[in-house]
View 1 (spheres, rainbow over the protein chains, first blue to last red):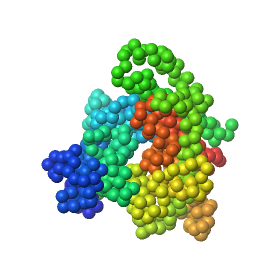
View 2: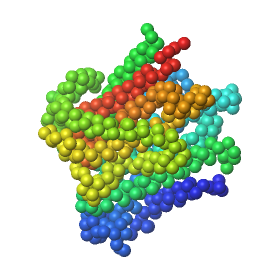
View 3: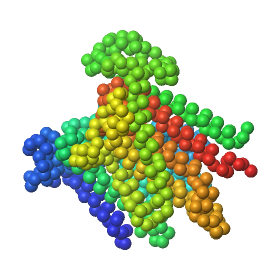
Length: 272
Length: 318
């Protein structure tokens, strides 16, 4: 499958891979401890501190690595939750039709009529923000979008002859969903997964920046901006490193998603 | 009744229902989640008796259904109760902050809408050549960053390095308009950049879609010049999608404004909402949340109604 991989996708895969590896092996590669004050306030970059230090003298590279770990972990888990919930419900709606479909679709319409950020703010005003609650809130709010896509894709598939055949054979709902619909709906869903992942990274960063996402002592990219934002007024760019990280990560994931979409939708030898 | 009026009336009816349902959803979310206003006031050390007393005093022991309609009535008449944290009436705060937010959003819209349509047209005109690629490159970059990052990048370069604009948008009532505009120039620039990207992309797609239709080809084959093709054939059919794009993006401003106000310490609705969330001031969160949601829903309804009205096929039924 990696034969004839276009340059853009290769770049995307490499950069995304580096970020995920850095997140997984954060404890090994981080030069200092996450909460360890190792220098002066906002030191410029040097051989000891490649990106300088932050607002209370912690090594910024270390903070960025651990921050990436939290951001990527939350975004990944939320994406997985969003996809499993959204896709399963969307397939059930498409296969069952009738009132089940109606009730679920109208409910999703309702949730989508309000911006996710506003809903998240309302919810987070009542409950404590922890990694678990954030993943659940973000995942469930976002699953409405996955629901729409998977329902639309599955409605087209569920009228195919082979699905009809499976129904006539007397297969159960779970068989139809996982054996007939899912394999054929996979490629648009996988491409969408990339976009949802980026959205999750932006979403969790925004929440943390507003002070209602990841709470200290945990570090995450949005939180690093919040902690170092005062420095900007003194011309210190510590708060801008997360911007570079988020931008490069989301552009590379975008490149992969584009490649998957064109590869799987092309008529000639798409699936490898 | 003209069929198009019926369609519009139907859409408005559904819109009203949606508004009602959305307010119930927002109210319901804070109901089902643990903790309420009484808990928030008394804090961790509250005894069950104290809690029960305060709940009775505040009317929190009555059924949620009754309280929902009271609350909804209050929102509609402007009487939104008082904030838990400082006991100030929420309605007054919102009235003042709403005009500040509208001021910000107004200028962002005035700048971004014409610019987005113009750039969208340029992208179509030079499709797949460098202006198109440049525009889509910038678009991709700006949707890859959260709003607050774009804000800080602009602050870093334009406020701190170049001293062109202030990094905090402090606007006072007596200020001359020009000074006010200077104060909000960076937040407006951020909001413009954020919606511009989406709007341009969607405008480009909408116009391309129209330009590829069979009737445009027919018009070209008839020998009409480009201008006539666009004026008589492409433009009337592109109005609906473009207005739709504009409305969706104005609705998107609703979200952008929340974050941008926090970055620039701008005393608007967004900052009020975020402050209230941090302080767990549920009545304020409810009032702001429902207003943001309502604005978003109403703009989307307007988009739908305009696209119904602008559709020639619906206007002139066979």
